[in-house]
Amino acid sequence: MRFPRTYVTIFLALLLGVSMRGQQAAASTTQSAPQALSLLQNSLSALTGGQSVTDVTLSGTSRRIAGSEDETGTVTFEALSAGAARFDFSYPSGLRSEIRAVSNTGPSGAWSGSDGTMHPISLHNVMNNAGIFPAFSLAGFASGQNIVVTFIGQETKNGHSVYHVSGSQQFPDSAPSAAALTQHLTQMEIFLDVSTLLPVAFDFSAHPDNDGALDIPAELLFSDYRTVSGIKIPFRVQKFLNNGLVLDLNFQNALVNSGLSGSSFNIQ
Image (cartoon, rainbow, N blue to C red; front, side, top):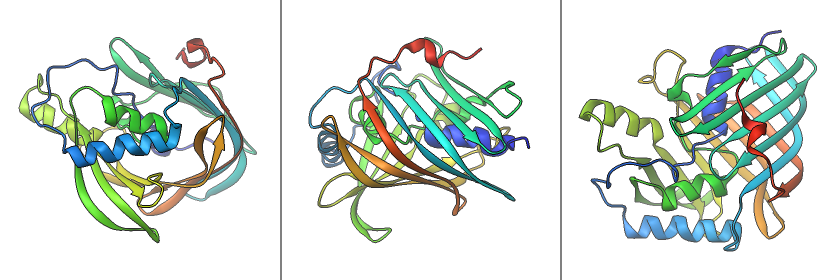
């Protein structure tokens, strides 16, 4: 059965994220709040222990829910700190994959269903920095070009006491209307556990293939953090779309800094 395209393109936007560090632009027109920036930097330190992370490989089980389809299979996720990432799934309905590539012209994405045919993904669905490996997402906000982050306050999220930080990327060289829309596409709400500063959730908006201005509420929940090679990794990630569970990832294995090749992320 073909994987519905709406869910596929939204899936990449939700899970793969965008490395903002490599994007070049003029100086930001708004400054980040020092408290918000400090929280993100401290959270990143809690995740990595100050180590450099260049790549990650995660493998485990994946439950996928799309309309009437509800199936469980296996997943392998690979990502580079520069922004490239890919998912390879094996379900009873067939093999599926999703790839995000990064070049000098910006990000691009593609997906394939059980027939193996690659399909492009709309640009507005690869702009958001929300990804399933929080260290890469936070690194973009903590040190990226033209990033603005603000501290919203302390609140409760899914039973956790959290610090709420809002982040987005500015595009000062673009026309005002285009800059506002593009900044909105990158906006993400970050919720950090008050005690550990580990990410509890990322909230953001996904969008239909043909309408980047239409928002669909989306959320990633992180739990079961474990330490692998000194790096704290969430071994369970749940994705919600429009308040409904659409993906439940439970990882059993993790490998950090294995030297992944960029050729693994080529879109053909």
